[in-house]
Length: 261
Length: 179
Image 1: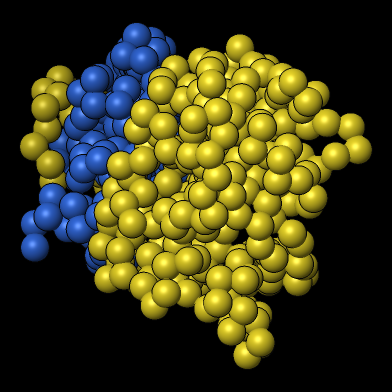
Image 2: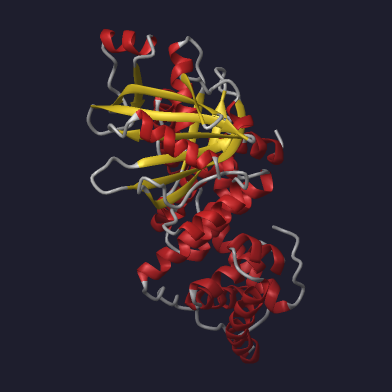
């Protein structure tokens, strides 16, 4: 019986009543075992997702890290990034995005409307954890993803995160200089697969050659063109990317417009 | 291994630590949940969900204290949600008749009857008042701790405790006067 801190008769009686009732309840080992089995199931699901994330491009909020990790996988290294973002955190006004940026990434640059007509649609923070090949945590960080839209054109996303968090994950593409700023341009085939689907030999070879990026997590297998421009500026790493053909010149102009802010 | 060391292993994501921690916290959690809900089947649903949520969030919890408090807060809120869904009164237990006569065995029987009546009255309380009573009198927690464990303000805890005590003392007094 616990030491009773309540000394009046009422309190003592009430405490006794509750203790007797609670202590009379049999501890069901089977109940605990059932609950532990559920946790083991959750652990297994988590491992499957982690394996998928190790190869997966997380477009919503940390594309740079995930793309970097894919390249790292192709080169024989393994690094994993897990990013969580929630639709509840999505903001749909530029003012609200500015508040997010102030909170999470004050050095981030962005525009509300590009000269070519692409306009701010929404923004969402992504909460990332990086792990090395041994599964040791390398750090936590927050990225911001901003989506721009334009009629009849593919959406363009701008993702920004602290350069220091990315370590060796970021891999550069073709270097292009615009308005005195150096950007990396990359265009690649992008394959999304359901979590348990294995790559064909051809796909493995294409991935190893850097001609194919692979992501896991879709319902059906889908291949698209991924165009991206990346750069580092004042401690922030940016990636402007789109699925579909926006065009190298357009993407580079947009990146230059962001960098000029 | 002490509780804090085990909880630290849980929040850092060590795989086996979570099940071990579950085994440690389960007996107390089960009793608390049972006292709040008074239904063993519902307890399993609530505890299952609370353990799962806690598992999914474990790495976001900074330390051992955070883990346990998060679990109890989650469990408590799930129990409230369940009770609200249930929306039925727990049947009042029949209290034994008072036994007239000599002291000794009668006193024990009377005491048992008073306890049964008090417990029945606890089960009649609104679930949030009941929860505070259980944390305060069964768990022997302070107002501040109860606020932390239930995710409510201290003033709210005090208010719920005040009204709960008022009803429970009426039951207690009616037995005392009849003695």
